[in-house]
Length: 91
Length: 460
Image (tube, rainbow over all chains, first blue to last red; front, side, top):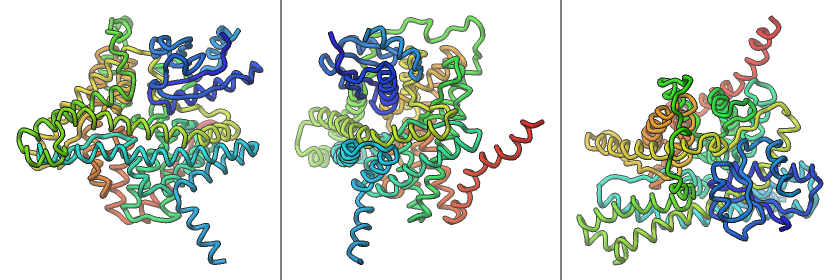
């Protein structure tokens, strides 16, 4: 399935997910992908259909997998980890 | 001419428009295209209006709670929650808060550029809540106008740099790396938890939280709105229950003759709904401002560390997160009884209930910190002491909040309460100008140190 929308999320959807969103945008730009929409929100908004790919901290990955395809990050500021995992999914 | 000036003054004193203008300025500084300018400005104003309406929803749930608590136990009952108190504080101090917020971020960049405190505090919502706290305590102490905004901004910039620095040694132990800083205003108690953990020490082979099996089924509690609803329901049902059996007539009037159990369910979830709306509003409000802050700071201080929200440390010890939450919650309940006991002896006037969010996020983080220095014992004891400490700090903050001290909600996380207690009481005791001078000196100290002692030390 083609990924058109990515949702980064954390507990209250304010701090961590926001930083992840900014990093995802940075990585996508670097990969030359412009057609993907990136947003951030709270765990309440994580449900099937809300996005094509969910990104969160590794501790919340089980919650995310219930809603669809997901990536869990160990180090949330590591651009390298994010890029590697994104490349794996986006191909 | 007079009409124009009057109009400008009105624009600047309409909070929603004022925050929109700040976003517009931030976007213009980044040379964004006109579409983005319009979209970003409107979204920011929208965020502010959503936030204010959330405050209204919270009040419909928290005001009857306060009345029932008063009826049942004869004292003031307070549910500490940063979002709730900030949304109420903004009703009165919005322009001051927004100004302190914007200038405070500049003050943070200046400190990162010219001192050894190289941290950029990226947790926008916490910076916003801290701005609100500072605006409240300094306004009550009699500061106003440009003086209030400048002193407030310097203080905000200072704490945005100082608290991540305090946490950095612990962060290195948690992440085994030095690239990440913690930007979350609960630092003082995380630090305390890490020190408690050191009692047990992190020797080779010590049992950490990640070595034990912990029921995974509890992870649904990571859902914010669910845990707030449950905690609030427990508080409500106990209070309404005591009220309904001890003073049925008065209680029925508050409940509008509704069934007390049903009433508790609806009001508890209404409170959670209010928090949800406020969070959505805050998210929109800071959506344009934080990336601008990040972009500008990366240009001006490329070697600064980003200080991030507390869930960044959660993946390093997922079990410590849940154990920390429970330990801290138990500490909060114990502190509640201690406060009630002190109240019996005439010390202190309010009961602080265990707020779900503070134990949830800060308790969890305290658990991760305690675990990093002292394994599972450090996690349990550190988070437990965290839970007791934040409860007493919230109680001690109430008198400096003026009329907002009677709002049945208050700030919860340790750094808010500590900054509030120290500077609020100081500003009350001495005059406004002395506090101004003191804050300026404190702010300049790290910069002066960098250019004098630290430099000498380096050349030697």
